[in-house]
Image 1 (cartoon, rainbow, N blue to C red):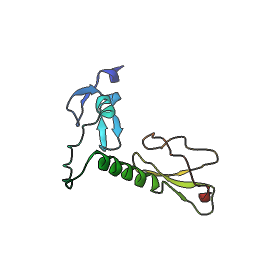
Image 2 (image 1 turned 180 degrees about the vertical axis):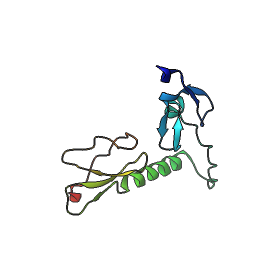
Image 3 (image 1 turned 120 degrees about the vertical axis):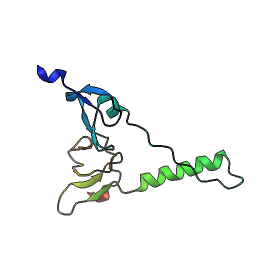
Image 4 (image 1 turned 90 degrees about the horizontal axis):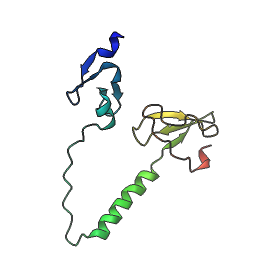
Length: 125
């Protein structure tokens, strides 16, 4: 019963919270309160480079689509020799782990609980 009254100061936001509610945040790399775990402080936005003259909304759209396609084309899976498993890289936290595509295990990233992308190419199996 004494454990319920213990409070600790969050190093991220500075507020006091119950000590048993702190969780390790994978991007911040430290123990934070529940509020900071759900909504970590945002990084300051980076300045975008100047666009050439004649740049319009269509060019913005095409550049965004190009970035999305490049991210999709990056290999998320790679074959592990001598086994039915593949090496998966999480798109959220970049954690690498073994994935069994036949049993679909694990169901989510073991580090951040993020979704695992679908295995599109069967040549890895």
